[in-house]
Image 1 (spheres, rainbow, N blue to C red):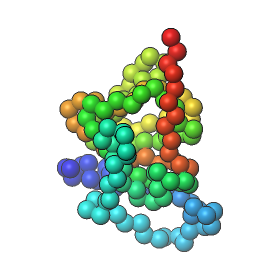
Image 2 (tube, one colour):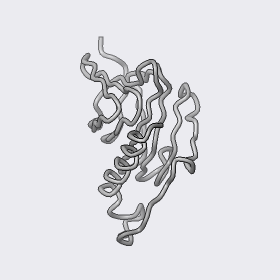
Image 3 (cartoon, rainbow, N blue to C red):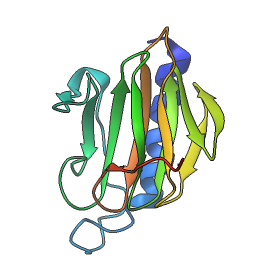
Image 4 (cartoon, rainbow, N blue to C red):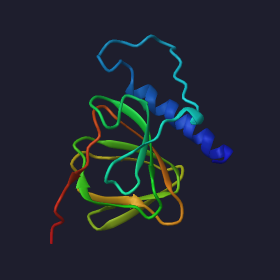
Length: 153
């Protein structure tokens, strides 16, 4: 990962997490000024079973658990998701590669440095373009989910 990507990664995590975690997961206020520090060498990657190689590294909370989380996600190059929704908004910062979403038949590409906030219950396709794995930073106020949908004819 080049210096620009590392800097963008660190800044993205700091800016977004400040907004999400004004309180701890149990609703109690957190101590002001507490340092959160997760060097890239300390990330613990977990493969999502049956996902075709998608992995995540939790920063706070647990993407696969309940409650708020912040995590990095790696999508293999060329990996496509089926038509689906999420039960809550899904803010995402693209740090590497080009991620895409297809909504109402319109494809939008998000190269490194892009941000999107996908609204809850919006049916879409998504994935990572071929050529380079996608590295994403995602966070939600509750658990992650992917709810398969049947495309309309």
